[in-house]
Image 1 (tube, rainbow, N blue to C red):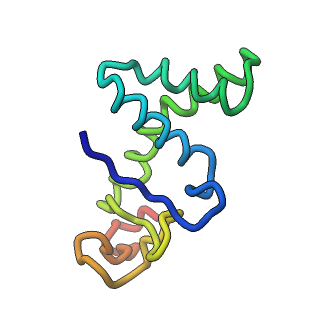
Image 2 (cartoon, rainbow, N blue to C red; image 1 turned 90 degrees about the horizontal axis):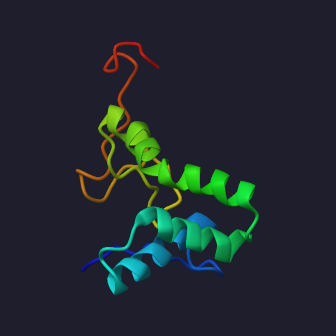
Length: 116
């Protein structure tokens, strides 16, 4: 099993709680590759935010739908790696330099067919 970790210099390593959720899920899946993502999310939410059913259900819904939200956000512009440089808090589609396939310039409105 392999994973990419984007820890930084923040006191809590990731700069935000949901970044920590990724670490938690990685550890759980390393221990048990057959673990269910909804079960992992629910466990992390309860450990992080408490046991209130309404809080757990709302955050779990947000977390379990987050993959599609990320795909919908990045894919239409062909920007798969839109973070700024020296941090991963993006977005930074205007950032130039580094690997050419990671820092594609932001398309103009002409290239997008005036859809912006």
